[in-house]
Length: 84
Image (tube, rainbow, N blue to C red):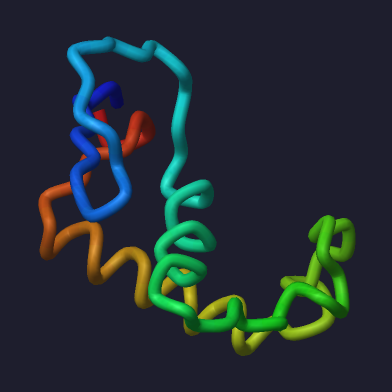
């Protein structure tokens, strides 16, 4: 999904520039936390590259998360390709 993004705030210089750089939500969270003076949760320090498949180690938690995702995507009307 491609959506426009506008950034404004103290310390952000006004500009008429258009930047076509790719941005993900993962890029935004650490930036907003830093701007707020907060620290980023260190949950990823155990496996920062997410190279271990925890679904195999914790099947009950995995099933709970899948059920939560299914419920939320239906509530929000998110359609995934396999639904089509």
